[in-house]
Length: 127
Image 1 (tube, rainbow, N blue to C red):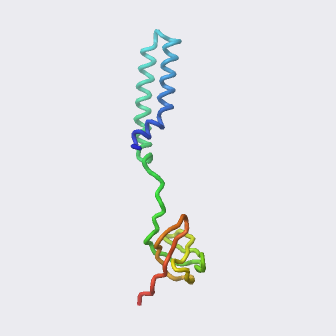
Image 2: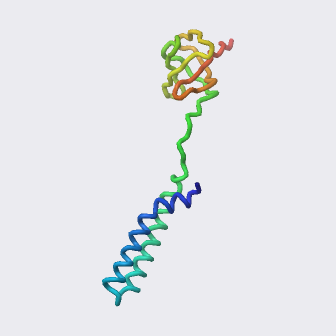
Image 3: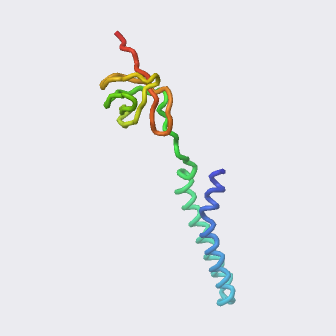
């Protein structure tokens, strides 16, 4: 769905309220109807323009998936079945790809992710 459509959906109640006020002005103050309707329409347009400028930059942002596949981290709780790794300052539950035990301090690379659990393999020591 486009940002404009989302904005119009979010603004439907504002537009409806303005139309109700214009309708009430026509019923109760017919001699001032054009003046009241003009003021309300201009005010609504100014309000919607300001709202559009403020909301549209963030309206299109969707939840971003945790893209940790391919990232490297360090084991901070031994992976024996399940452990914890640290990637860019974030703690992630982790399981070993081949089911082997990975001790604390070893570097690992994320090869997959299942929900919030990283599937990792140990990185061979580079000497």
